[in-house]
Image 1 (cartoon, rainbow, N blue to C red):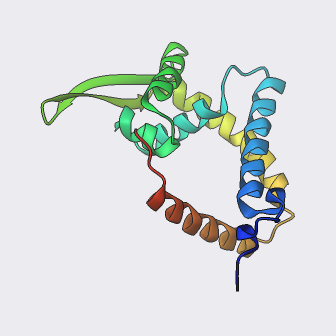
Image 2: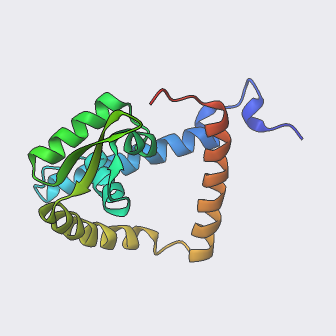
Length: 158
């Protein structure tokens, strides 16, 4: 059976790729609204970076860029902003005779992240309460499979 996505007359806005793209935009906007309404000077990318650094202490900037799928320049800007806010500390070290900057959260960064996460988590729980947990697990698995398939063919120069 042929996939509807491959038909030339298929409305792209009905495709799974469009739906995922739209959902991503909604998530970005939700995060932006969340921080704006609460008068918090933080972007969604910065929030994601804080989460990853918290869960991967001493991650290097390049590995962070790979996880958040941002180029190194944009990742550097995100980290500069977080460093200026006192949330992230960069420590220089060497690996294979190359300079590597390891990232850790400061105590202020960890406290700030935990406060924001606690409040945001309540919002997310409210949004997701309409969906049974097993459906969310299935969806996550399907999205991970799709992501892995995409990662095999899409090249990022990070």
